Amino acid sequence: MSADGSTLAVGAFWEASNATGIDGDQSNNLALRSGAVYVFTRSAQVWSQQAYVKASNAEAGDGFGFSLALSGDGSTLAVGAYREGSAATGIDGNRGRQLGCHERRGVRLHAQRHRWSQQAYVKASNTGAGDDFGRSLSLSADGSTLAVGAAFESSSATGIDGDRASNSASGSGAALTSSRAAQHWSQQAYLKASNTNANDTFGGSLALSADGNTLAVGAFRESSNATGVGGDQSENSAALSGAVYVFTRSGATGPSRPT
Image (cartoon, rainbow, N blue to C red):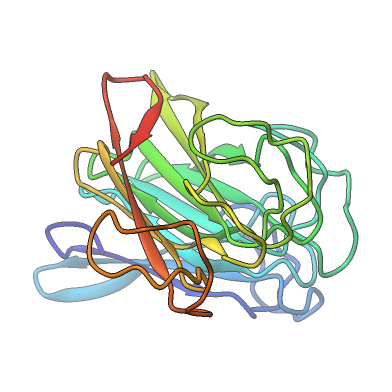
């Protein structure tokens, strides 16, 4: 919901029409589980549907609407399609190149509450089959900072902007942040755990602060037996105990750093 409670976005990630874009034909079921989002607004205590939102490249199985977030004023909507299948990377890449069925990921951003339109198509900088980029996401209150989780991303990098080219830590997970300036989105930081290990699923959940300067990332399968804050991350004797990592950002566009 928007901060004032007047705008509500609802995901239906198994919705099945083959419509694309905004307010297309909802009457068929030709794209099974392609997914959709419905936007509602409230005026004088009366709710009405404002928009029916589909991906610009809607295809069966994409799961558009599995995750979503609204900015505080309700004017920017981020929608995850974690099973989307293009091999594009970065912002507004070629969304027609497919990675293969059931190995998909992607996020779309829509803006302008009263005249919804797609503003950006966001992919990971190291797109890989099965990464689930878009399974979790969060927006800052003003809609200018986006964080996206890829819980099954597999690089062995640690910390901020490490080497994302390898796939030697299967399912370790990652998160990516992007920022918007003058309606243009760009990728800002590639985040990994400080103790990256296979199957930790870092990025399975995440949350941004209102100002976008603090990010919490969950790794629900992390396995150290540490307790409290800042404990020993170096061993794996408490299988699936889980952990949370907190990052802070310095400067409007600078990289994040772990705390």
